[in-house]
Length: 317
Image 1 (cartoon, rainbow, N blue to C red):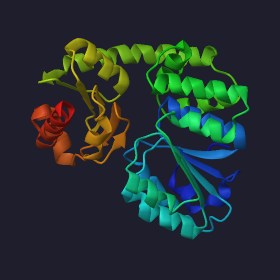
Image 2: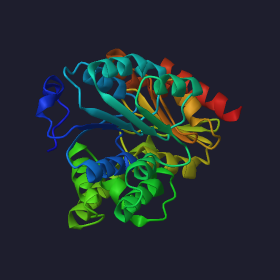
Image 3: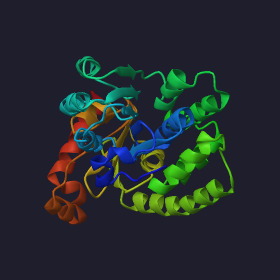
Image 4: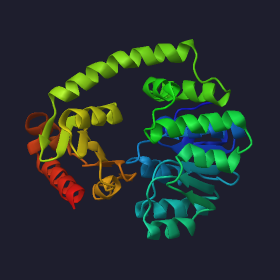
């Protein structure tokens, strides 16, 4: 049974049909991770979270009483020192905690997290769903195909057209859940997914056009505002401006960054984020006043200027 991550579930874990809680990201790699967990364990409770927000979910899960017998599996989120307190609380409450990740981690954070939880595997050689596949379902050909689809899009290989269809079809919680259910059963493309894809293609075209109109370039850093399709928007910026760094800002202060030089995660880490060497994300933590100001001043806002300057400096160093 799928239950939305509302406050009630954290107060009453006995409502869970199964014993696995999966906390993961929101993209196709994360959806493939979830499909593999579903294929392995059947009933699981999944929380899809942005990289910037997952610590808040950890803190809420750490308040669950009588968690003995429950396992929390994290994937595709990136480790940081700010989660250590929540991990300590989780273990004190009786949780088993496993973490599989392919984001770039600081060595000290790896050691600290490893000392807190039951299992940790971090490897940048694979995408997150490949790690889950190798750990849990290595002899399952359908699971292998799920993992290969996740890799194709997450590493921007784009060799399998199905990964483009699936990643584009993902738009919200419901679409993730529908696609997870299908993938876990070995259904990769069907009429429903095709229809979801077609609807999102129309929206994506509009979003790309709007993002291009809002874009500009500072030295070799292209920047725009878009509340979705970050990878596609960044690719469009690079093609348009021949830039070496692309910043895609959301109106709430979150941002995605792509860099030619392998410094994307380093830049994001300075703004409460992280990710991969060439693709990452962070958060400028706009106040309500700054969100309003951003509508009128956009790239002149102080926090945005600092992000642009930092990105430009590190990308050229």
